[in-house]
Amino acid sequence: MDIRLYISGKVQSSKLFLKEVLKKEGIKNYVVKLNKYGKPYIKDINFNLSHNNQYIVCVVSKEPIGIDIEIVTDKLQRIRDSLLNKEELKKYKTDKQLTKVWTIKEAIVKLIGMGINKKMNLIAINDEKYFYKSFFINNNYLTIASFQSINKVIKYYL
Image (tube, rainbow, N blue to C red):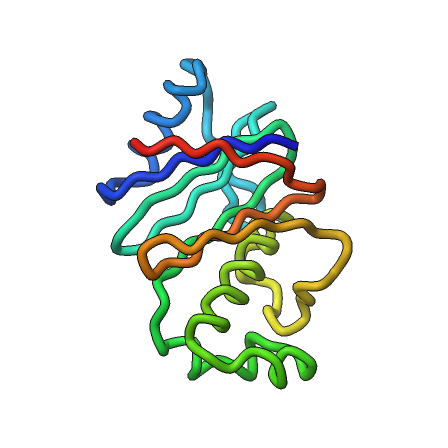
């Protein structure tokens, strides 16, 4: 499956960034709705957004998709026990490792459309139901999650 990833270093509102991305995709007429968990969607268009204080990102695909971006800090050390399962607690200890795992799990819950209503330690990152691809960009982890194998990620910088 091919995925289009849009990245911008100028943090702006999600609505404005989505409008810019959809324009690049050739989509002009659309209505954004929210599912019962608050995930935005547009009929017949699979997309997902994430942002932090450095970047805003959006993925567009033919299939359901999730994305997360986080800057590497020590803040996840405080929630390690609620983020990781017993096996993962033994394996992932550094700030960089925890940030990568967080982005994987967050991208998965956004893929399934439940947001952070799902307990993160119940999501196993080695679950064969999910596929993901992670990137490390200027001390940030960005992860894209899908139900299908991710063959190619085409990046656009806006």
